[in-house]
Image: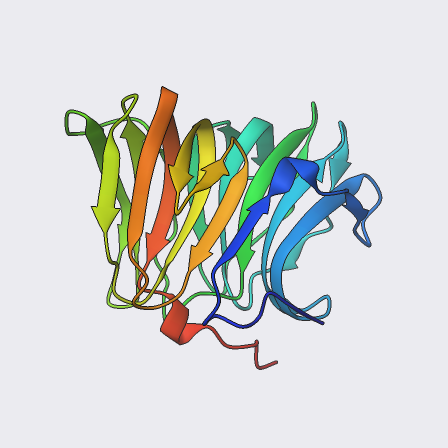
Length: 220
């Protein structure tokens, strides 16, 4: 499967308008945003766990990065409430689930194969700045991942090297004349300027930059 696999194109999806598609695991549904491959895929998705649902134990051959959007994600390593950012690099393993249900934004097979840095953190803790507050969640030679909180009317104006990808966590903003509501997912190609203006309630967003030149299908 190839879905939004042309990384030279701007893509905007209001994810709340998408239907849920059942995964092979009962009780786990997803909204696919981009994908290169079938069940083993370079993939970006919104995934919803019904109460008491879980995936079988598995190893992250290509790595897994996710944000807990709603509820509490769980595995044998602990509980991950909404607002948690998690990186599980290649070779890590777990048995994920959610006793009370949860929704996550997840990216698979998008790690440097030699990355072994595993961590989780509260995205909002330690924000710095005024009208546009930010926190670096992860940074390496391939990418920078940030959480950004914007006051009403504030502007984020930059042209990221290597493209950009944004998930609107809360509030709303406009970009190139488009409204990005809560849940909106935007991907900008390399060289494209980003000029994001927060709405009247402000905006909170996750943003990754620099990573698009490394977008390839998994080799398994």
